[in-house]
Image 1 (cartoon, chains in turn purple, orange):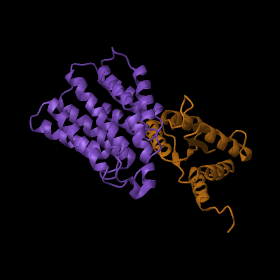
Image 2: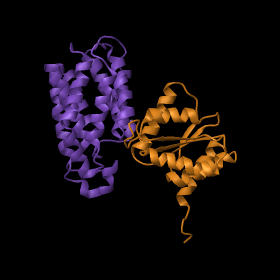
Image 3: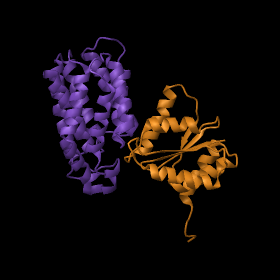
Image 4: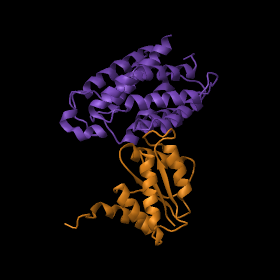
Length: 205
Length: 133
């Protein structure tokens, strides 16, 4: 990962802004129609708080987490905020290698599950994030490169998004819809998958 | 005295509830609004809530009344952030309707109730019948 952490956050912002209307549309179908707007506002605000010269990964991830917490506004604020803050806390040394990435991913996943009191199968971000984490670790453990691990993680996350179309929402605003939430993909699982893709794209640039 | 924090997606709602609570509350009583985002859009902000909790505390703890969804998540996040910054403020979130719970909780605080009893009073508001049926 020779690219600056700033370039990764910028790539995330870009993919969210590009898909702002799409995410909001998904949320309009089963939620309160603000996911795209909220996430775009959050990532735009976050990018203003960091600079291209920032090189301390831990510090940048903390700033991103705190920024999202105070500017996203919806449930994605504390959820994505926790994701970045927990990933930051998992960094114990200066060098970043694939093992530390696995630990960061694990800490982020556990943090989001705890914050949202969610498990797999409830039509949430976890349905993309948990399989993505498992695929990522599996690839690294079997000697795969970071690129392969990211590709597998994205693949698993995309399958997770497809899976959210088949199940009933039991968390968040969508749970009011009960069975009518079937057939719609979860906005949070979708935005997470988009973020993973932006990481890989930037990595390969 | 126990402090009260009102968390809503809408700043108008939280300000309005503080105003209603103030009618019955003591002058010195701390009832703090933490609603909406800084740019006035609808939403909840854990940093704003954490600051409100610190402002509301005078040593006896703080009761938080929140509306729904991310208001609860953001409040939980705010409490965790305060713990991480080694704050020792006692905080409880009431599982109560926000308006009725806030009024019941702030009156209990006004008459000197503990954080626990403010919590109980606020949560009892859930069962309060408005139509006396």
